[in-house]
Length: 270
Ligand SMILES: *C/C=C(C)/C=C/C=C(C)/C=C/C1=C(C)CCCC1(C)C
View (cartoon, rainbow, N blue to C red):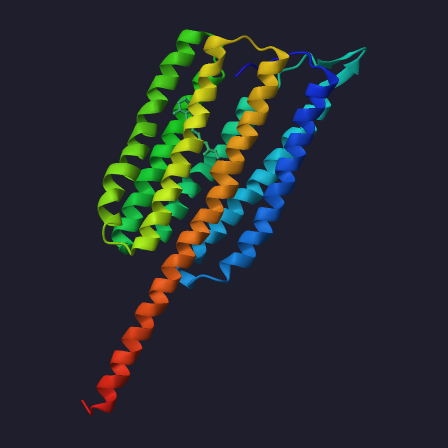
């Protein structure tokens, strides 16, 4: 991502500014919604819903922060908004924002799969390490001005990304076969949403190879990243809740049947 921003038309400047604020407001609403929803699932799924709440809370802060930075950076000069002479450190802020939130997105998905404790731990650790590696390896490329260096780090960063996709699609499709149909369907929707939203980020990474930073490109990138977060963080959180709720209904049924069997055994005098 470029460090220096282009001059913008007033409409372009305002569009991005209000889009950041609207995104922050949406994330705040999602935060309270997730807290309320967390009470509606069995307590062993609650950490996943709390993680979604945490992710949207961090997102709200991030968007308020970059809205302020954006506002500070530009001044209206004649007909155009002119950027300050300093760097706009959006790559640093964005990668700092991803580091805690992206691993948690995957861990929340792993928790609602309701697998054995050992497998849950192994998946959470492997996927978290892979996301952290992906972010750490992408960063030097993101801030490089040399396009060869950008390409090299981007390619290396794609390896853990492919590993994540492999684990989600190949490895987890085996455990989905044992899940109740309704749950398996929701898990599949979560994965599809995840791949579509996550695929957006490396695509944006490629933009500087094709275009120069004009006002239109910059506005497109900023709004594109924000929309990707609506999908990858806000909407994904509600799917995680839906899986947790479906799992809770199944667990409730199982517990009832188990109790009924125990009661029947007690009546028959065993
Ligand atoms: C909430 C933020 C999310 C879900 C961010 C996801 C980011 C990625 C999947 C980034 C992937 C990248 C590559 C696969 C290669 C180029 C460098 C990255 C870091 C943009």
